[in-house]
Image (cartoon, rainbow, N blue to C red; front, side):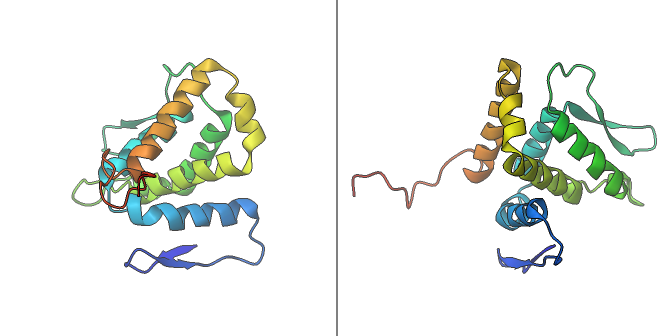
Length: 168
């Protein structure tokens, strides 16, 4: 469990039985949380790219509930990421229902999906290396990585100060 301190840092609490994937995911939360928690546009972009990796999309039913469903137009996707999304969808389904005012807060769900997907990729590299052998999958992955780049480039533009150019 990552508990942010509100100052861009926090504490990671681990169960004594935590496995590599659990530790990895909490480190990802620690690294990404200060950035994607406060930047809704970057978080949404990365979340939507993660859904694409899993061949999934968002829809809204007539009651205003947001649903994550299989995208029938997806001709290529990662089974590992789809399984992760399905598992998280079951565990975090309550985040997808509207509150009394009809608003749906997806932030926690988005963060869980993003951190889980990155953890899957980090702890199962052979699975993803095999998946990346197909050109269609490479395109999906490049789009996902571009989204990560946008998250860390502060709105698509790198800061001009503190850049090491080699000319110092």
